[in-house]
Image (cartoon, rainbow, N blue to C red; front, side, top):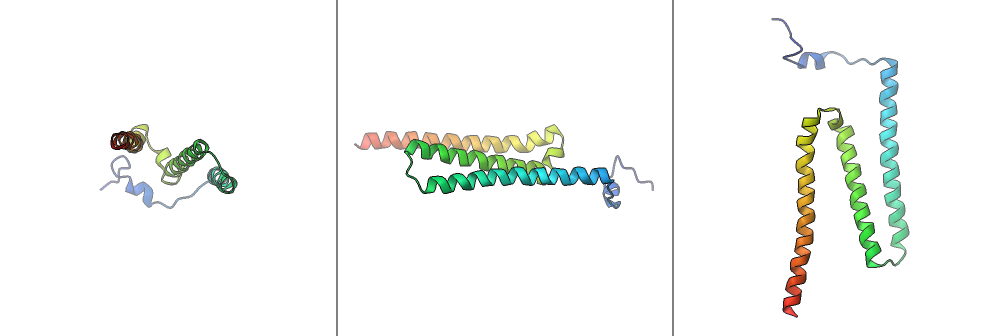
Length: 128
């Protein structure tokens, strides 16, 4: 029986992996860039946390800081999924199939938080 790589890709993955020196350098460069980007984002988060933990800030500033942390965390999570889980190497349709529901869930959580806050304000106004 003849192995066809179009039908069964397990044959391709069973062969030993060997890289040329150029491919090895490209992989190491990608790893260093990912490490640098995630490190910079983490350092920014830590520095903001250290600076603003020792000061008294207004509620508006504190709200902005919380949203900034949420955005940075989502950027890091998305980048980790794209690079380390190899989602960035997949076809656009598969990426959309995986990422779109996650974006919608985040959007629905956002809506629930704000609508819940509006309902709470409404109930508090009625009880006054």
